[in-house]
Length: 221
Picture 1 (cartoon, rainbow, N blue to C red):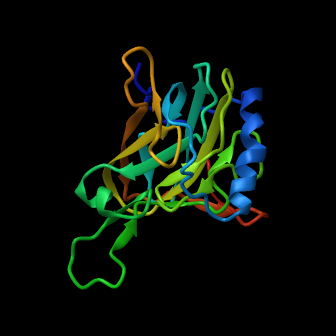
Picture 2: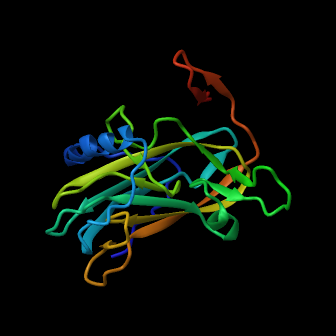
Picture 3: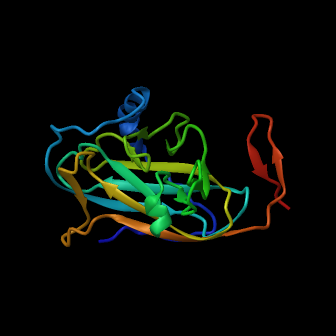
């Protein structure tokens, strides 16, 4: 079974009660500032299932969108540390240190990493929670969500704003640990879970307004 990678023009969110079981662990990791690789991580293969994967296929400059991913542990072992790695497809995306950015190949630039989307502060979060739900790691593209017990699910969202027009493919990869010893697989074929979203960002900017809490939102016509 492969990651779903379903495309949707409107992000759909699904709340699962079991997803909150990992909030405390993830919050603890986030409080530490950064999660590092654990050499004592239990090695092996851990079976998981991607239950939700949505991201708008059509966006506009300045528009805020949600990337939603849901993962279920459908094996009989606790996943040591559920991780999600996000990158923009292509050479420029793989060379960038930003999860939602590319690296400008022009020589002599003081800052070659350029965002395609800007990640909102405090994200990713678990669905239904106001607290940050994913700890940063030594790899800026990888987010750690803590352990996931058998039968439990973790549903997370990333809030991003499009800042560069064009056609981009966003890739995501699910894993079971940070050291590389614990590997996530899907089904009997043991395929690495993950997927992609083909998205086009239009240069036409939407009409927006600033809410009372300071968030920029699109004005619905």
